[in-house]
Length: 526
Figure (cartoon, rainbow, N blue to C red):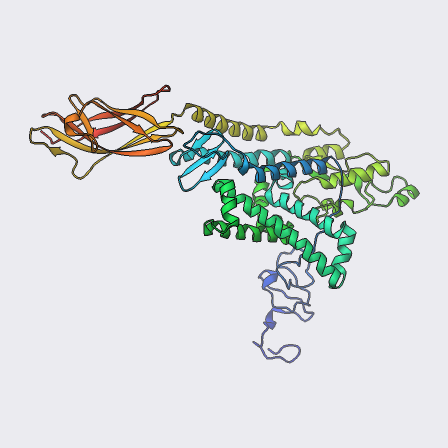
């Protein structure tokens, strides 16, 4: 069979799938049809409308977002959160905390070299990593609580990507002017003035990125010392590499990608849908009140024909991700509520009630559209799902606090030798060898004793104590904030069989603490 224009079969198109009018009919999805991109194609699902042409690109070209400056309660709250979070991030490494002469005095420090994590009066050792795991779990469940209650409010206010994007957008306004000025500058041809503005603005971007990366490394070493070593080129290579990577990522993600990180790169917008339902508070456009749209003049000429929305586009112009909230919930909405500030101001200017765009649940929207009275926003927070999440979050927090308050500052671990498990002495007694680790988790040296509990007639001595000084207990002094390894030997009289006993560690100071480790004494079978 020849093609309509004389092509031979198999010359690039399957003409058996094409009808004379250029419409492809195939049992495969439309994306698998072989019609020309300009030809109309019919989807294999009968209920779907025809598609004019096949997609030529997988991704839409990015449209630069230049959001407009706005003032209002949500914008002021966003300012507050940004200032608080940035102050915490940049200032925390410089806070001092006196832990005595044997421990670092930085309030928050991740000491990888010595495997310690310090947070003010709390010191976490490697074997206590469950505290860190618990904090990470609380952070995750905290996101569930926030999302279940008020949607993506974390994304809109406290997410690092949002905070630094907000900083860079304010830099844009400072250097290039507000929205209209930035739009004009984008369209202007490249010249000395535009190049100078871009160079100046990108230099500020780089400074912000450098300060961000520089602050991050201060959490892993003494801040004043590391700053001095960094600028005198005496710091470890990993410090320079880390700062370079974080400078580049902050410069790129905050300066140029911005909303693309939220829409395409971040997995949270996809995950959060599982924690939201018709009872979750969302930034919502009340279309039953705003539609059909019409200007103030049209509304005055035809009373009752148009809704409250005057199509001023202020809600779109202030959005940091450039979406139109009037199109309904969408992945680009980070629930920052700046559109609420913009819309409320417009409603005030034209003498109409606020709340055309507002925080509301889908249930309340349906109730209000039907003529009912919506509930106050705070009542929407008190619902079973949110309370369950909050209860789980609180339970983990209380458990961590209890474990933190109940923990001791000493620890004892015992490991018995397995080869050989025991030795027969010349006098018929039996000797076992053990490796003890005495951990002192305080900022001062502590005297301690190791005693045997059980094993009648048993005696203990160590590599540093003579066999003639063997006794039921031995004394040690463990350095501050350290683990001391002790090679211990335990001997039992002739005829002692295999049995369990315990090493008991007791501190000999004004705050006595005890830890016990049970182990096994090996002996020949009778």
